[in-house]
Amino acid sequence: MEKIIVKKEEENNRIDAYLSTKIGTASRVTIQRLIEEGKILVNNKKTKASYKIQEKDEVIVEEDKPKEVSIKAQNI
Image 1 (cartoon, helix red, strand yellow):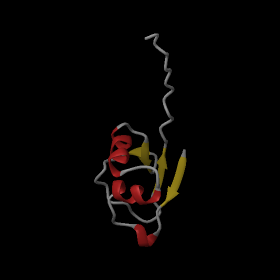
Image 2: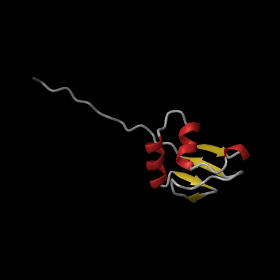
Image 3: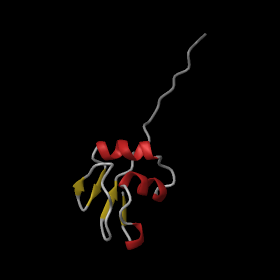
């Protein structure tokens, strides 16, 4: 879980665009998906990708954990 506090010079940006610059490994599409899944909260509330962030907003990002993949060899 990552907590981000918005600074004055960062306000009035869309949250999806803002977070894509803050979280280097996440694309804007990934962030939009996380918002839809309720894994990104602003001031402890669900939000929309179009939300314009404001100074002192508290953004909480619950990052996806990688899925375990099991690969079995085939006898060919």
